[in-house]
Image (cartoon, rainbow, N blue to C red; front, side, top):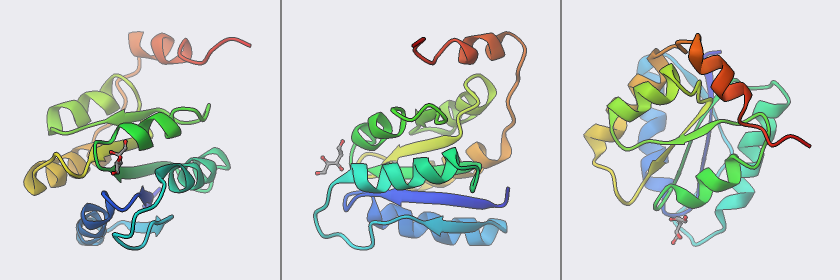
Length: 145
Ligand code: RB5
């Protein structure tokens, strides 16, 4: 519960390193699925690794970052067990938990101020799911096969 999975590409790497510091200060551990530098790479590799750990039940929550947030968010949401929300302000992070029960928060590393990112992380980790009418909505998200 107190261990957060992390993933990024090269564009998200600098913010991921900052997120690690914030998590430590907040008393969380983390597992970092990469990438580990600003060298150009492909975000799906790291997104899939994070998503698979959550699918297996090894972790409950993750934070992922790419340049815009879109590519890594799209990849994560291909996994049935993942509800990944693109967040750039704490109000959206709060609603992603309250209404969507998001288990992964994605941030746009190239388009978010550091202070906003920190507030998003704090809010994502400290906000619970509201349940009620929102439960039926998230239950209806998976495509029926
Ligand atoms: C990398 O240049 C960039 O395309 C990537 O970080 C992300 O924004 C993709 O959605």
